[in-house]
Image (cartoon, rainbow, N blue to C red; front, side, top):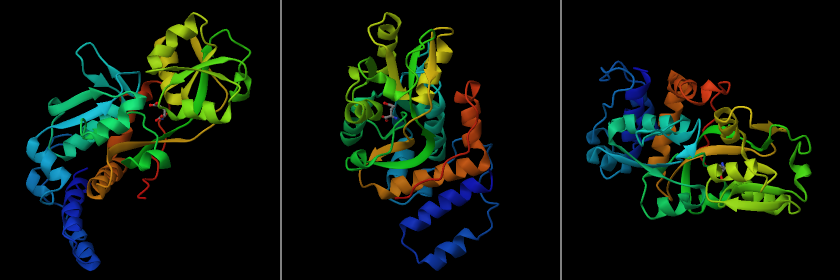
Length: 299
Ligand code: GLU
């Protein structure tokens, strides 16, 4: 951790001043023993560590960041009794904040649901979104994505005693709950038109309809559904294998390549030094095996 983090900051600053590649390489080869005297999770960065005028400098200077995340999804983003969300997405946001010198007390958490993530970023209501947010080309026209930091896949959840539905082809003629503005809902509309989509605003709104028989199944990413299965013992189960790939990215302002590159640097450093795995194990890892971190896609 101590060797990776100062190098990361130095690299960001140099990249932005558009020095030649050789200078950047020479600087990166410098002694890394540097200035990081704190323990791993302390917020030690300052605005002067970042290029003037960059989003990183602005956020570091403000000393706070506004993060959009889910409030109703166990394992990834679930609001606790104190009003603060917990989960893997929340931990990823904290890693980013820490690298900006912002402590977790100074993160403003805003609930985002599937349909309002792009508008919240576009309107500047949030600085970043970390919310089980699939990177795809359509969304890339509106927002930028750092990452991926995890790869999920769409699957299906039914009542524990259901034996009729075992995969997406069994959804024909059945009512399936998913969330408006999500990729799984879109996938059902486009590729499984014989299924009857029951759209809601958030995944937790699908649970009661599943319990009372208003719908036959719920579909979204496997890891979101696993959280609901875990939280409601004996009630629900997942069926079939994942049938899509959902690479989770950190959504940010469209065209802010400097900020995107910097977040990608932060992710790679956290993959390398174990903070990513630690974040997983402290949250989703209670229920799911620890995966390998995915390759960041610097598109
Ligand atoms: N990952 C999918 C998406 O971004 C489904 C989960 C969600 O709606 O947050 O649409």
